[in-house]
Length: 332
Image (cartoon, rainbow, N blue to C red; front, side, top):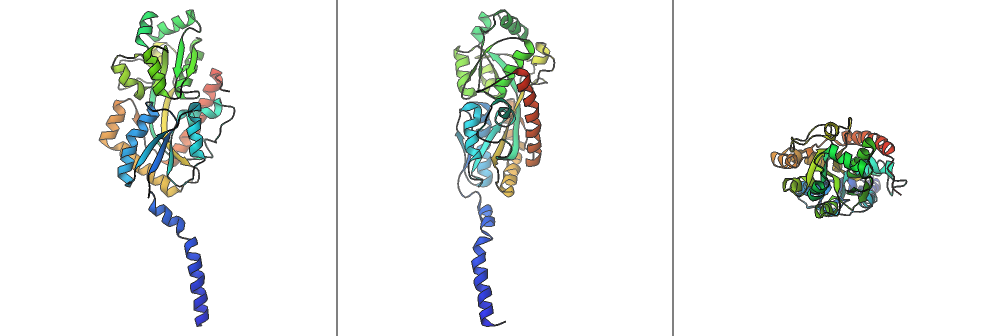
């Protein structure tokens, strides 16, 4: 080999080198700065509670801060759209919900994102039942102590009960719509920008009732600030075993409307980053401290693999599409 030939090979190799390993090195360095977990609802709700419980665990696992950022609006669509349009570099994650990724595409005529094409599912963090709660003073004044009492009052006073929710399209909203459809009652829906602000008005007496996620409602139930009538899941909750399901209490046969929450990244995020986050999340959810903490709040930790979570989202989309059609719920 001549000296000129060796020089040409060396120059060609040096020119090509920056083009090949850069992506690999970028992945190896991740995370080299703080990672944001966007919660598309106001502070105080279950989405926020779960994100803030998980963030410190991921911070310890990766040696970088995982910071929770609340961006509420339009039933979770504002924050969700922001993450959909973010760079797929692993530094912007979403704590998605059954609303943002199972309900809204059937409820809204047009979304600013595609819940399937614009996201890379990472893992299901937890599933939770919803719980039907009332302002205690109002429940006493209306003589409502059970689900049958509520149904009787609502039928005798159509439109006089107001129902708060964490926003249009959330499972909290659709639980109420399904209840209205299956029982034939009419209650006025008032959507908020998250469960936290809705609960404040419910406790304060502005609202009458709400189908809230159990983790965010539980402390207020235990403190006597809210009166719980029933859970919305098919089975009773382990943290409130004395509380009946709506299906058995109403009785409203077949009633089942639970919530779930999971981590997602923008589509195109490297599989290596997605898998690492899923693995560390699953490890954290399996630790006795975090597992017991979440279960004591009524949540059921998961940690499923990305492919399994993607299939789960597809199944939930089909399920809630039927609920939206049956309920007749619409959002302009």
